[in-house]
Image (tube, rainbow, N blue to C red; front, side):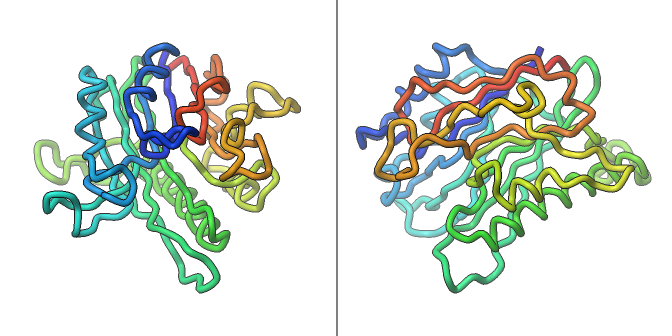
Length: 283
């Protein structure tokens, strides 16, 4: 079994306004340490978000048995003590990845909205039943134009990997041209910033051509026709005026859907404006 957790931790800021990563770590430990932990909104040296702390270093201390892979969505000067001011997504894993790719997502011009850079981290992970791709991301909230472009790019990543899997290139082992199988099996999680009946959700799950496994949403696959547990707006009514609803998901390629053993949401914690979601796969 492989357990994956995804959580937008809002740089450790709870509903009470206090920034404290140790509270988030305590929730993860109490729920049971996963094999892969995907965190969104992790700050480094940025005085505007987390008082200039390096949260990647802090999280490595809180989770010492994990390898860490940080994908900076933005990387700027002006950080605390001369460091780089960064903001992005962090993956902590006890499964050493065969390969890690960091993808910058598109931000087409949109003069009607504020926005920030977005990225996705992709890992090739080896299991007893073969390899699969694990991807973590955080999509745009304020610009639907950009969000749709980001969804389309992620679909292109999936299509590209599947095509490479079916039509592998020339392999030159022990050189930079050594081929790493990306696999047509994929899990993608994160804060997608869209709701289930949105154009972005519909685009994400639009069928591919017959050679590419479609992407399905895990909750719908396990509990068809059942309302999803909310992943935001439960406690923070200031930012989420519409109340409890869902914006965080696990999507999987169709060829992995039958291997889902459980999906759940911790709806009790208020140490972020989002809730942690957990997926257990038999892989």
